[in-house]
Image (tube, rainbow, N blue to C red):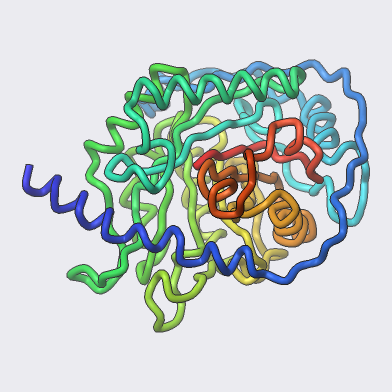
Length: 360
């Protein structure tokens, strides 16, 4: 019990990291040009995807998926860019393995850490209340875009950046496995998938991702990596915005790809957070593969115009594969004097349409 309280105190002590760069996001001087708002009708038949399979990752018990409908896949990808073929979108990438979630379904995720009520909605409310709210947000998206099934998700911060060095000077703290197990059990109650998020601090993805292999080998568990807290220089997390290079991301996709092949499971989804360009370097060298679907996720907060602008600069103009968008229930309203957060209908006007939505 003493160990649990110690971890909780360390997580709470690092909360300032989640607000340190928010002002930088608001202050970014970016273009005021408007988002593309072209649209296209679609009659694509929506593919059904099992959101949660068994947590047994053995090949003998793996779910068998029908062959990929490549025509439908291409149609859905084109629809996300509203059939407006430009120099940016849609992105050319290999067809995924059978059982791929994207772009057949949209993911709506709740983000946070169970030790803190301030790091996201996942830990802010009691379990039943949180799951009830998640189901309500899923229904809103189903209403806004009836053509695209919605899969709920719990996006849990499994490695948190810290303001203190820790014993190994990595400035990161790994959450105990019993907390990850708890999140997976929560997800089962609403047929949700799970994302484990990593903030490496002065550690590296090469050291942190393998620690989660037993979970990432499960077909219903995916990964998120946060360059904001990947420190390449001497300044600790919270003092400047961190960065990942394409080489870091490619290591992760190669690692996940091997797990997919070895365990005979559907493609993994890798969410990469980004709200300013320097958070990712050499984006054109990021590799795509049939085993991993990459979502570049705009996770800056602010008024709608600022969020749209950051999405355009960090996501639209530097395409990788799929796009994501984050809503902050607190920072998008109280801190910028806005009456409400952006609605699903408003987010669907983004170019390209985000296929992964995260609420914090």
